[in-house]
Length: 393
Image (tube, rainbow, N blue to C red; front, side, top):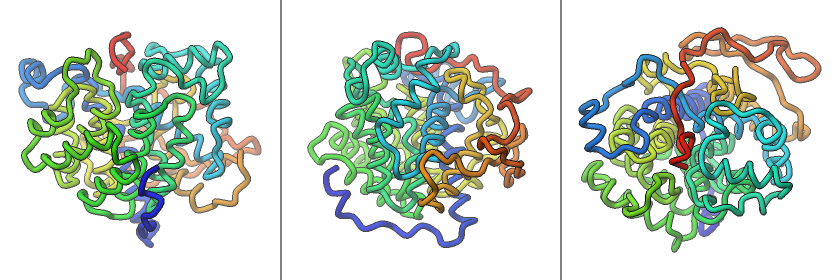
């Protein structure tokens, strides 16, 4: 993991309310960026301009998150259950129980890296062999790694370690490095590090001579020149897909750095650069949300985010990213809780407010007595995702 092991931890806010604001900003920011970027996925800037001009907000009547949000919830729930004791075997078991052994939603497990992983698991392969497929370098881990950064706020080395464990079932090489960079960056942002320091921490989380590090360095170095320069520095030309982790992570950090951590500017820069726009905007949104907090997210954008519909992962239906953010902090505050104990549940009603959720009674089995269904989550579940049309991740 290169030099990150030698970096001292960063002090997160002592005020638990401030830390909660950053955690909620990270995961709500990810979901908002995901929903904003979904319609622009796999498009180039010229195509985006031809359809919408410059995207400045949602371009659909019922914006929805994609696999990026649902897999982030999935990873968050793993950390809530197992904490820092998470193992590759537990990750693999969760993939089998919650995804591989169940019916899949319309997105059929999401992108290429997820498809390859599920096929290997169904053949009986175990981690890390389950990650030996042609798309192990994709951004499928990077899109969900923010949960590790929230859990390990101020501890980028720990966040990167947990991301590597999470990714062991699905990714190798550059795919792991991309996830580690995002996790470490979010952990630094959770501690209040400014945008340049966040990017430096992300770089320290991956091998200096890796493709991911080279792309990230180039994008951040030209970020002051704007999105055209970032795109030119990061985009891998001549390759048919848009899901390469070195490219997507560089675009996301380039957008975040160009905006100096401002939420609106970061996600809109990522969206308007196109490519794997749902993932790049989700990562930029997680970084900026952790940096500036949930209050920095425009209210009209936050209002569209409801509980997950389960369009990609039916087992994630009913979970809200704000609930996951709160529970990650609760789990991190109780590191000695026995592995496998789910901890307290909070309930996010089907409202657009970001006010603290109402507590519910916890039953002996760790549930809150609901069936996880909601009448509406403000989405129609019809947005395609990277690889959902067999043509992306």
